[in-house]
Image: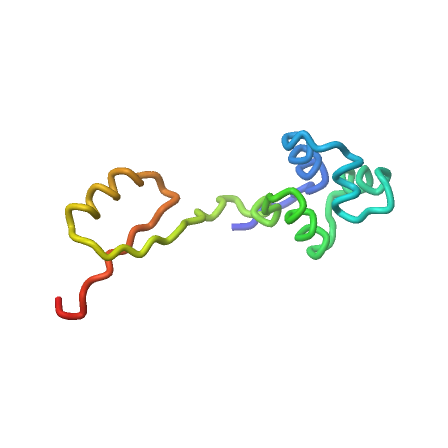
Length: 109
């Protein structure tokens, strides 16, 4: 489900601040003409998708997820070929929801 009334500018500004990046550095990395344009972005309710993706890359933050009520779980997939005991130990070690473990069985099984 998508959120309504997302004001993306203030969210971008908060991420810039959280990353301890100066406004000048943010503007430079985004290719803006100057700091003033960064403030225009921070005060914007909406910006183009292309610009949002560029800013996401600069800040290493997926701003598109801000438009969802519930953020999708991002998972890493590990494919493991080993015996059951080792898989059980790995499942215990990797019990957080960032991992999905798949057991690849032999064709003979």
